[in-house]
Image (cartoon, rainbow, N blue to C red):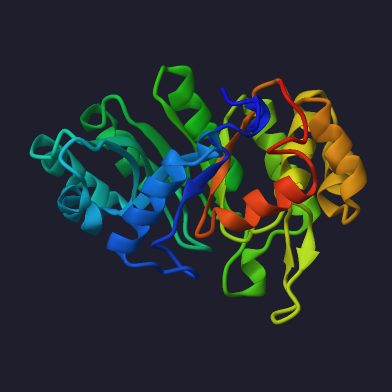
Amino acid sequence: MSTQVPRLFAGLVDDAAVFPPGSATLPAAVTAHREHRAAWYAELVGPLLVPTSALADVPALLAEDERIEVGVIGDPSAIGRLSALRDGLDPRVRIRQVEVAVAKRGEDPQPGLAELVALRPHLDGVDVYAEVPLTWGLLDALDTLAGERSRGAPIAAKFRTGGLAAELFPTPVELAAVICACRDRELPFKLTAGLHHAVRDTDPETGFAHHGLLNVLVATAAAVDGAEVAEIAELLALTDALPLVEGARARRATQRPLWVGFGSCSISEPLTDLIRLGLINGGFAE
């Protein structure tokens, strides 16, 4: 592990360049991902995220001796076709994870979860993340995931923390409750959307308040240490970087508890913030 990227931040940011709002072309995304993987901050970066429909196009963009790890994103029906795609997939491409939205907001997530669980035997060696809406049926869905995980399935939760509408941004209290629910079930989780910066901020164009990655990191660690919803919500609501930076410094040599990481269409935004705050690239060494 590079001393420039402490263990706390290893694999924190998956490369979601092809997804909105970045919406890079696949060739541009593969080129940029190659550069990220060769850079001094490579340990920060997770796999390249691609839709199921684009998976077959990845090998043509690789050098003959190149290898790439990808995360595949789709709905249950698309992921259901993945086993056939894997059989003929170029060995230079390794599917590290799949991420599946099991329901739309307001829908019962259980049918989608059942469909996803049924696919597990066809996804050997792949981590699975079920994206569950932060609405009705959430806790029952987390119980289902925790039950599958207790039986040895490498399955975890994924939540949306932003988007193009205000209701897609959970409040600090809502997100704190979800973090506690995952903590109580020993269920790891991923996040997606809205986490562009280290510290909570408000987008001047939309007026939407975005969660900060340091807020989530420190709040989740506090939850694992026994904090409850009110205290966790306070940490998520902080806009002062200092206590968050201090909290991160105290854990710099440890693995992130519970929170797997998040997908971002920009690697540079979170990286720049972490450098500016002295947490990466010379901020401290392990």
